[in-house]
Structures are given as C-alpha cells and as structure tokens.
Length: 366
Image 1 (tube, helix red, strand yellow):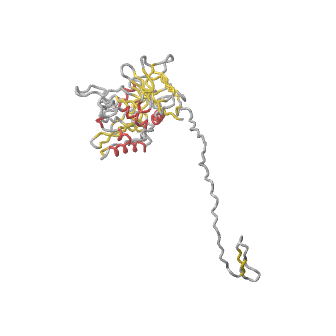
Image 2 (spheres, helix red, strand yellow):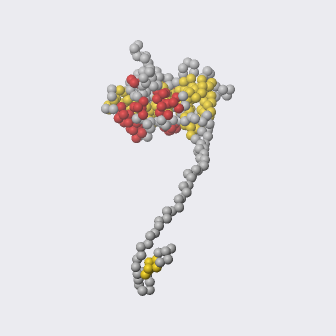
Image 3 (cartoon, one colour):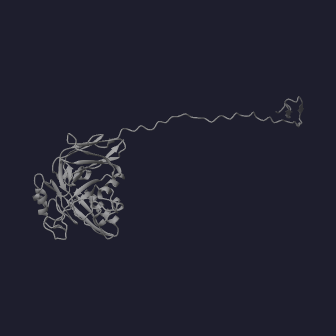
C-alpha cells in the first residue's frame, strides 16, 4: 500500500517486522487446500410408465345391405372378343347384372355410344384395357370411369409401361385396375409395387390362362394382395370374368366365359356416378359365386352374412394368416372380434364347390 510520503510499505504478516521503503524477502509457506469430499453418485429412482394405447378398433365402420353387381373386365369384337358390344351388354343385363364395364384393348367403349341398351337397373361404365408390351411380356391395366381412349404401346421396361397406364388413367380422374399379374407370368411382385396408388387389383379371374393361383415360384394373386396390404397399401381386391367368348370356341381353345367373377359395389341404386365412386374407394366385395346379404363393421367386429348353406368363413390378417374359421351362426352371420394384435382383417367365404367371396381389408387403429 502507498504511504503519505508516497513510498511503499511492505508488511509481512505474522513476522512482526515492518520495513519502510525496502522490499524484504519473506518466506511464505503454501498451505494446501483441505481435501474435498467426493459426492456419491446420484441415483434417480424415476419410474416411466409405458404409453397407454387405446383399445384396437376398426378405422371405419359400416353396415351395408344393398349392393350393385357388375363386371369390370370383358371383351367384345371391338378387340379380341367373339360378339358385338350390343350382344355382350345384353348378356350381362339379362343375367341380373346392374352394370358392366366393357374393356376392349386400347379402345374405350363410351357409355353414350350404347346408351340405348341401358335400362332401369342396368348402366354402362366406361372402360378400356390399356394394353402394353414390355420386356417380352404383356402388361395390362384397366381404365374404368375414364373420359377418352388412352391406348398402350411398346415400352423398354415394365415399370415404364405400368406407370404409363396408371398415370394416364388417373389424369382422367379414372379408376385403375391392375390386371392379372400372372398372365404369361408377366408381372412379379416387385413389378406390381410400381403401381402404388392404383385403386384395384385382380385377385381372381375366370379366364383360364391367367394363373390366378400362381405356382411354386410365383405367389397367387390373393397372396400378392396380402403383401401389398402388409406394406400399407389401400387397394381393393376384385374378381372378374375377363370374358372373351359367348359362342363356341375351337377344340384347342379353353373358353373365357361370362358370369364367372364379379364385384358387388356398395351403392343404393345402379347409378354411374355412385358406382364409380364405390370403385374408387374400394367399397365393394368380390365373388366367384358366393352371395353376401350383409357386411357390417363395428369398432371391434367384422361380420358377414353368406346367403348359401354350407358357407365357411375364414378371417384373414397380416401375412395372410388365418385368424379364425367359422360357419354361419344362429342369426346367419359369421363374426370376428378384434383381439388386439391385428393391423387389418378381411373375410374370405368359401362353399363346398369351391366358389368364393372376398370382403375388402379393414384397417385396425389404436
């Protein structure tokens, strides 16, 4: 510190000597700090409860008793069928169908052209089989409820062909149906995956050459559908005729006849707009000979009412796993109740003669 004289005064505390103006050497002893106690590790006893999931339930509920029967894949002399469009429309109308989409190859058949054939209870839906060729294989997509002819052609890759058909149908606000993947073993599962966004997939066909059931190397069309559902697709499975023959065929030709497979659309009446909406949303069931008089989905149950005696209902879930197999109950229904581990559920109904029906898959949420 500075004194009144301006000189420094150094002080060594604890020595008792004061030196003015001269710095004195003083020995200081460094005293180590007291040791600090090390705290024990902090243990937090926090209990975290697992998130509470809501009980499983179907994402949508419905109760349908009115259906419109129709076919989505049929041919006439306008491509490779054996009868005129008039004859084909007349056959379906006279056999109790509510609608028909005539799907000739690369040739949209306009409802207006044959409007005179419509009747109360029967309407015509626009259709075309967009017919492509790629990698040496046929690639076909049906355009339903479209506005004008699309046309197919040749493509270097199946992917390009599929996207052509899918995109051109959707550009017109139409409904895309992916046809017979196993016809000529044309489309693998990976090929079909290119068509994500398509509304419908053929899972059963009355045509004798489309290999609906698959083989040792290729999955059935229904198994392809299961895989797409497992991958989160929203795509409806449909049964079709793919009819080409109303008349006689050559002895070496297996005929593709009408009346083999169809869909039943959820609609109050045979109205073109209602039917197209039902197709776009997958609001239908499919059949190769089984009639369902009612389909009901509540929050926790899927129920179907087969009309025919002897019907056996298999409820199917993820991976194509059989969840339950039941017959008709006292009220005529077969019901499946959610157990908690399902992601989707659908019903397949079979008769002793092999005829079947398929509901759509209904998603489960929590």
